[in-house]
Picture 1 (spheres, rainbow, N blue to C red):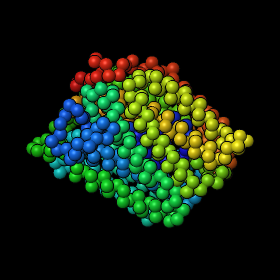
Picture 2 (cartoon, rainbow, N blue to C red):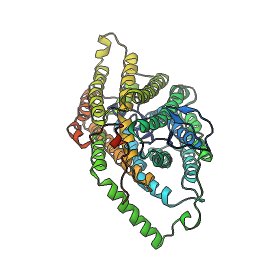
Picture 3 (cartoon, rainbow, N blue to C red):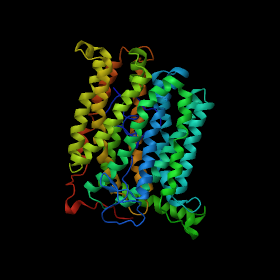
Picture 4 (cartoon, one colour):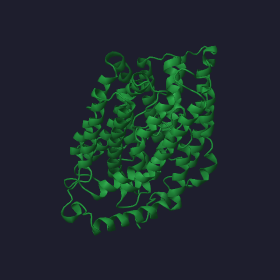
Length: 491
């Protein structure tokens, strides 16, 4: 069992990819749950701007690395609002599971056009900066969306709009930090790239740990509006850490492009370069596999209604489950960093998908009450289920990000990486909408769960469908001499 994260956590925010109860919110996400990259190169680059020689996951904590880690931390700590948002949609706005899933899918739309943010950041500096200025803007936009949720929103349309704006804020800041770190990760070995990824995802997991327990207790004590108000302060951290970003201002004509010939020529060149990179088999085929895997249906919204309306799980307990899930994600990062970063991608995908699908079936035991016949309470069963699936899901998604970061072409890191992750997010959104359709077809509502077990079984079995396409992934031998630089040729 996992607690749905209905808001913005697509590729960074992530949580495990294999929890079929909510592969968007708790997975890619982070889900999304939902797509982040690595941090600064170390070892081959000595940074005179380094604030210390301290290291985390083997990565030197330079100002740039600290800024990136803090942005990921903010994306994780925004989970403070997850339970408040879920209960707001369910109890305050009286939505059913299908409607909740549709609104969640709508709020994830900004994650599908991330290449646009990458192109904007790369091509149109604000006040002379391509990264700092957009981090500031993203933080302010996120704060505004949560402020509106805390004060004025009282309809599903208003909630959908604010969720969309908040999602845009996180997605844009995610693209900016991706561009900062991908340009430094290019040419690194899989092992080193794994260390860089571990710093980013470890920071996000720490943010989720900080927010998880209080996400439930704060709703109990102060109500959802107050939690939204506190959450409105968190994106401002993203704006503040932009001061740590080491970036030279863009001078002269490069400061921005006019809307004349320069703009269209630059746009045309970027599109051709992007298409030239994407159409290469070692980029297109792995991305296709990830899209198809993410496009399998999800039952997260229906499961949330079941555990709250049927089983009566309190907000405080759900906060504890989120805490366990967050710690498990950090364990998954450590597991990958310590044991799996040298394992070929195909083997990781195959094993974690099969195990995750099998363990996801255990939710049927919770829905049917069979766990109690074995002497396991609903609460302990849910905690154990979330723990295992979160570890597996995090271990699954790490190599996806590493591969994507290492194949980005020179000069358009933000646009290219955002394109790859947007395709993955598109699959996740499609999977959520398919899950919403199945929820409606099977007649699962806020108080009727007769067919929920069947829905869970279908969602879990569907995650196995892309496995015959594992051959689309490259055969790599991590860290071999000929494989330490998987860099695309510029077009």
